[in-house]
View (tube, helix red, strand yellow):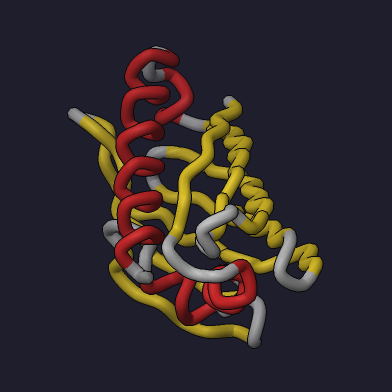
Length: 144
């Protein structure tokens, strides 16, 4: 599944880049995080509560900040599993100046889900994923 969008942050691209390329800051805005163990400056192990209806559970994820182009691009990946299935996520954030000094953030997220959670209808999975993305985007904006 692929999701795309764009939003604006009231901060310059360097400030936004510094935020999204710092593992402690990224993990602070992820919804329903139960625990965080920093592995390195660019990775952390997370336990995240996720799901909807009867299929809910905790996922053990390795979150990594990958490719970075200063003040322009950050890519993040998360991979892991839980009792209800597996998750492989790749996210990219492209940053650009706006005329008023803010930053336009264009993002794309590609998610592959396996296991019991994948047997849910795509409509339920899409709705749940869109809900999590909306919460994450709102948290991202509020960080500034």
